[in-house]
Length: 143
Image (cartoon, rainbow, N blue to C red; front, side):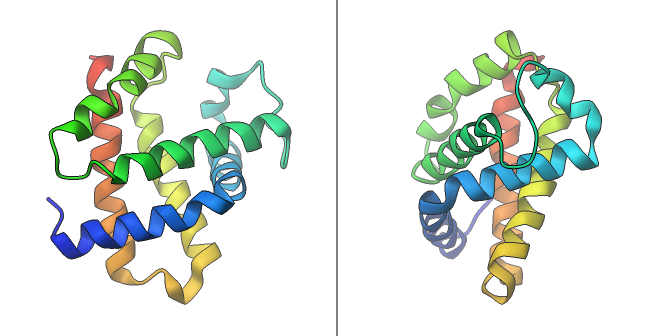
């Protein structure tokens, strides 16, 4: 799936996102909720306005989980380390897997806007592959 170079790119990229996790995550979520309003239905109890504490907190959790997942890329632990998130999204939140694809698109756009020329085509492609694999694991328990 991912080459050795792509894995290292992802580890470096996502670990560089940790200090700005709230900003990146909340912006990507806000972009998704604005572009795809139906995705708000899962979070009706939260304040989803731009810059809200709920949005910042949720965004940070998502970016931190994505960053943590990079430490297990290409290992059997990748799937098992995300098992709790898969169960949580399927059984408690009941988020349809289609929404993961929508979020992936929004996080890619957010990264491209923030990183500009520092988000090369190789980084973009590697991130897209990784987010697809991450989403597939999250969607596993939904079936």
